[in-house]
Image (spheres, rainbow, N blue to C red):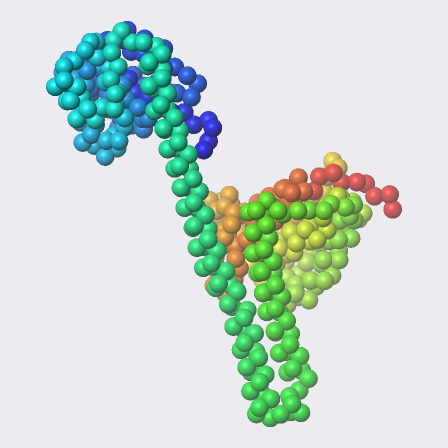
Length: 378
């Protein structure tokens, strides 16, 4: 529960001096007091706000406390609010029964005893706080269940796709062998089978890694092991390793990489973030150039990967770093929607940042920032 949550209490009395006196008795940092001088005014407040407790004066003109309580019990929003009746003197058994029948949980008698008032109100404050804690736990449980359902739905679909593709490749290869024998299958055809299967295995491995990382993040066990790294060389090596994939996606790289930018980072995790951003560029901006710029400014390293894809709508920008959220949904483009979520967690673990600027129809530019860079002395 949010420890800053305040509890609302309603006090109703037709005499202003009584309201002021009772307000002073109940005033605390975690309590908000609402005052009403009539039943009608009280009903207006009851419909606008939620209350942990209502203290109602019994004897009021036009609408007395019992009548107000009856109206409260007849409305869905107010029927469960605990009511304490405040009366100027002892009331007979019939009126006591009327009060409890109207929904009273207790009575207070004037002149009010400070200790009794505070003690009784404290009970209902604690009950309300417990209720808020339970509501918060139920909300978290509901979110966890929704996350689980989303997780199972998306994961089962995404994991099934590469497995299905690999099965088809295997079946095709088996049929070819049965039909013509191994001597008639050309090395080129076999190589194509193996390459396609390997791509699907790579995809399956990435999906499983993402799922494992998400589990680690939720358990607070995502770790980084920073060492001094030549970030410029790391970026160059990554581009060389992914040269064939970038060429296959027809993404021409326009790179501007400052030399010998040294940072403290976990090279495995840093590469994970960079590869995720490159993969997104290849997915969403096939056939278009990708601009990469690595620079050092004021002792910090900034890497920007800018594509010329469809861009992201402004209202979706805040959500793209959340689990299972994607800036764009295009047919034929698969994914769990975990890559940017993991990337943000990795950058947070480095005390760095990841930001995005995007214009629909013109593309997106993602920038990661590693603090604590060192000027190379090479």
